[in-house]
Image (spheres, rainbow, N blue to C red):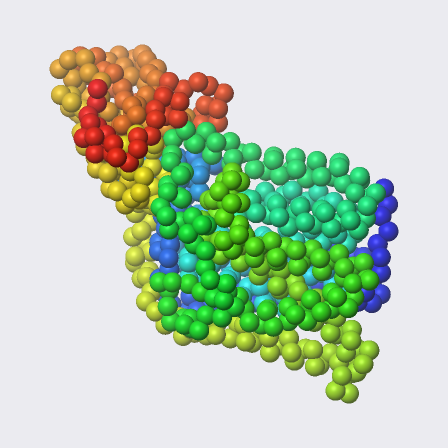
Length: 608
């Protein structure tokens, strides 16, 4: 099916040239590399890393993945060193793209600081080029310098800086860097009337960067589909096959990562992310005025709290964009693009108000957004597009009316653009723009071997979990795991005394009588256990079992000395458990006790 493309309202549309084969792609790439370096200047000028909300958690995550890679696990699903050597599904469950990128850079450079800087720089370049590509589509290949301006405004925006610098939320920042590519696909659908198959790959990368933030991509996608169908009508029937193809691409790219996540759902308590009252969208509803002006916030003075104030520069030209949409409503391009951008902006704004509480309560998984201000990532992209589209229209008006007697009025609009960028980026890129404490380079290095406990979401399910105290969950689970589960038996030899990444664990245990003992590792999907009497050559396969109150792996040993070998979860064995009925399944075999029965459950933790 052939779809006619209308002439741009910005002027005659240039002859189509594939973006990746054009000189402008290489210029955008070069500009993105240089601008991203400028954005990172404050942290590159210091040997450590600025204090932030996540601390050194990204360091611990990259270390776990890298050590698993060194053991030959290309897609790691289990860390044997985390949670004090008892094991953690962190590699399978945490957001992938930045974690994998930083682990790869750490492997190549051997420096934690380099891993953080280079990985952040890579995703900044991706975001910059994505914004250039998006604006190329939005502006119908005209005004390439506005593409560069949009990329620069995007990276220097308040929320982009807040994400990676103040919050230390690198996973969210990598997802934010993918959003311009998503919006570019939406604009292809609206402006050209064709469904881009590659949007499936973009969606997969977005979800793997940050699963919850990626889920909200359905809003711009659905809005774009509705607006495009309204504009192109019968042509929409031609989107069925490419739509199915893009969904298949998305599913194929995500499947290797999503399948072990589903399998590990039998192990961990993901609900800990929203168990505490402070970590739900309903309790993180902020007053509306703080999004427009936060008089108490000065860049570089504070890291213990954040600002959600949107950039005044981006808000400044939003009324101009709205006015242009009204004036040019009869123009199909302005009408459809304007409705799309303003509808997405309105939807994301609504989701941050108390009127959206029922949405988070009843839509499965929506509550895991936790902080509604995370949707500022979408709003920042939309506002940047609106500003650049308004400036593009200003260029056309200036050329027509010759503002200030300047040829084509380009100088006037160019000066305005430079002023906007200076106001946005200026306070954030100076050598001394960070005036609070830093984490030392030595601490970054030392924390490669530290434990990442997060909020307890990687801890195993047990029936004595208190329902209102995250710190109690962490403390009591670890106290329990450290307690002896050997009864009258004695460990004669083991290679599991020191927490480290490994593929297998070995124990030699002597028991005066037949006993059921608990080993110092958490039982998990994809784990395999083999037992043999000392001196025997024949291994006997044992089931992977535990109890509702004790998450540790249990094995039944005969009298005398026995050897135990535990093979820790791998990708294939973990995925294969989806097709098997496990010997123990907490959600099938146990019930979470109410908070009132916690004390009794905690006191009765001894093995049956």
